[in-house]
Length: 202
Picture (tube, rainbow, N blue to C red):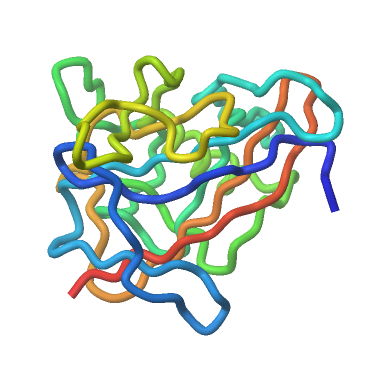
């Protein structure tokens, strides 16, 4: 069924040079499984197009208020395990603009986007602030290893979110399987379908 909110058209990983990685298998639920050599050094991307509402895709990656669980980004992604240390501080990222000690992203053990949960809202903002928005002209992915040209993975895509840089050690994926779940909100507030993938680290 076509939902009113954005339709996820592609969700996956790209290597450190932005070439799209292929999943190596699927899990018992049919989710694609990606197996990078280590838990950092790759990009995460998600693409979408408008849903049945026809409303433009939302573009906000961080929208946080410590006392308002409804303050959420348009890109809504969560992991079922802690990334890095899993400290709940929002947007505690590394880099010259960092204002807090990097502490990673807290996991949501049972995937949920409970609209009344402040911890879930914080986790969504914490991971969302590590992404930025791309058009087809400046896509962060290189789907064709022959031409090496940037572009969307799915030709039906309208917009793409990608990690601003490769996943760093301060929010690395730990050994074992980590499930990522994503949904996208449009400018009218409609939520679309969810997509899932598994990052499997030795």
